Length: 195
Image 1 (cartoon, rainbow, N blue to C red):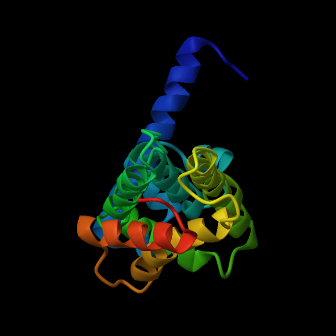
Image 2: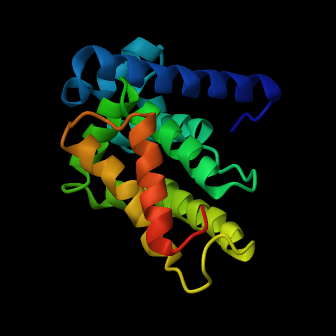
């Protein structure tokens, strides 16, 4: 395999073009009508190239979604756990609420029930790492005495994300900043946190 700098740039350029093409097509046609053939044609790459990097259209869209979600929802630590959680969850809502990312992720979630490999990929590449980061941010607040030592941090993360997924999957209106603030405050109070 040629791994010269120019070939690596071409590969990254093709990867980016493929991710963007998949997102554009998802916006234009809806998740269900996107095909690997259409992605390849839009990106100017071959189907073989796509299948060399991803096993399915869902995997292409998952990578594009994950990159956006991770960049839009950092786990910052300003020392104010309520503020940091509001910022983080508002970023997640903003990604889920708009095309192409919200519809793409909804499509991916619908495929999980029929594709065990995709379900495993979603868990290992998106859900588990983000879950660990969220628990880590809560643990740092716990270490500062902002959250009681006996609080169930895993459950707290599920309490924070559950309402977002509920609204997203059922296509209900997503939370606004005020709703996110209420959610964060409610979960922190339930943990016995000092606000």
